[in-house]
Image (cartoon, rainbow, N blue to C red):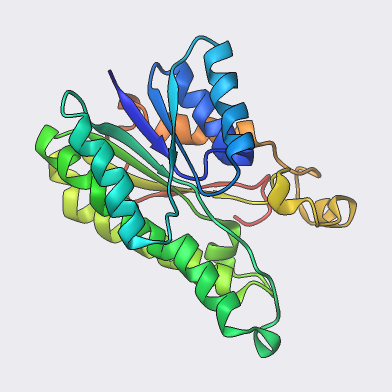
Length: 242
């Protein structure tokens, strides 16, 4: 059985990625933190389309919890390993830096950046031993150009981009690739507070993207066909920032 782990897989881009990877005949590990109802919907959708999946609840920002839960899963599944990891879990707590409180900074950095270390470290060993793996990190337009009111989020995503490029160079010889996908404005719960009509004027494509469009980029990078692509950041933003 081929396994793929998608963090933050209960909704939005994470759900779309889970469904797309399931079409590629991966058994999907749907990670979530609190919203079991939405995670269950993702699980049912995968089963409805003929795929297989399981829920894996842990907080990606909590190093010990990741070790305990994901470590236990790895110990109990020696017959296979996680071939594909999609680091998708993330949060926004937007504010101007002058008004930003320390928890707004720390929570965003912990969930968006520390999680990369917490989760990737756990699954990397098996990929290197098996000499095959795909790591895809969901970053953001904010991490490439920075956006006002998102100093915390931009810093975290820029950090993941740097980590992507560094790790890619460390492990390329082991046939494990590390890439990032940087969505722009995508129609999800995370952007529902934005005025789409106002923002789409900034986008050459004149619309917000759909989660499925991001999932297609992830699916390609997760495939065997992308074996010579590593350390790259692919933007999915309708031409907003090129």
